[in-house]
Length: 323
Ligand code: ADP
Ligand code: MG
Image (cartoon, rainbow, N blue to C red):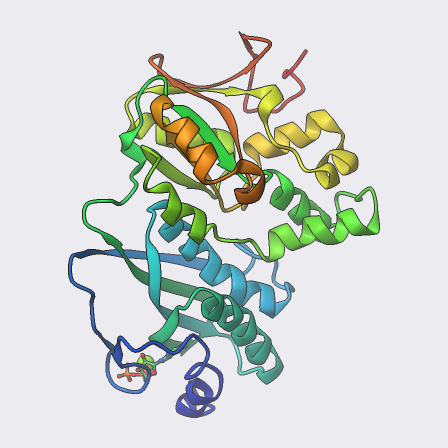
C-alpha cells in the first residue's frame, strides 16, 4: 500500500491485541512463531467481512473491527476452545487514519478482553474487505463438535436470539424501537456481539454437541441436528425473547426474528438428559444466560412446536406461522 504500509502496521496493529508469552515472534518478521502448549489440539478459523455484504458501508469502524474478530471467536467458543492468536488481512480503499484508529480499537479491545494476541496479517489496497483468522487450542480430545448429539438430548441456547437481527433493522432504518433504551440495546447486540467463550469452555464438561448461531437459530440448530444424525424440535413458547425485542416488534415478530434472524453469535448446544441437572447446578442459567429450547429427536429435520403440535413453518415467513 502506498502510504507506508510498515508505519501503518506499527502504528495501529503492533500493540493492538493482548501481549502473550507464547508469541516468540509476532508482527514484524515474515511470519509469526508461536509456542504451542503440549497435549492440546489446534483450533483454527477464518472469516471474511466484505463491505456492503457483511456490514453496512457506513458502519462505525469500531464495530467492524469488533465484529471481524467476534465472528471468529464465536466459532472458537462453539468448539469449547480457548483462543490465543489472531491474524488480520486488511484490504483498504485508502488510508483513513481516523477509520483505522477506531477499527483497531474495536478489534483490539475485544482481543485484549480475551487474551488474544494479534500476531500478523497482510495489508493491501482495494475494496474494503477484512479477513481475520483466529488460532486457539482445546485439550485433546475434549472439543465440542456439531456431531455429538443424540435423540433425547436437551437443546439450549445462550442469550436472547433475534436481538441482533432487530439491531440490523434499526441500523437500516426499517424498524423503530419501543424506547431509546431498547434502540441502544438492540443496535449494540448487532454492532458489538459477545462471543460466548467462557460458556463454551465450561460446556465441554456437559454438552454433547455445540454450534454458534450466525445464520439464524432454526437453521443453525438444524445443522447441529443434521451433523448428529437426528432432528430437532424447538419449542416456540420456550424461545428466550428479550423485553427490548418483544416491546419493539411484538411477540410474534420477535419469535420469528429469534428463529430466522442472523448475527446473534450465541451458542446452541445439546446436553444428554443425565447431565442436565449437573449443568444447571454448576452453571446456573440465570447467571450464565442460557435456556432450554427443545429436544433432539429421531425424525430428521428441524421443526418448531407449539402446545405439542408442529407449527406450519414456511421459509416465506411467519404469516403462515401460528395461524
Ligand atoms: P511480507 O512483505 O513479508 O508479506 P508484510 O510487509 O505484508 O510482510 O508484513 C510485515 C509484517 O506485518 C508481518 O509480520 C505481517 O504479519 C504483519 N502485518 C501486515 N499487515 C498486518 C495487519 N493488517 N495486521 C497485523 N499484522 C500485519
Ligand atoms: Mg504484504
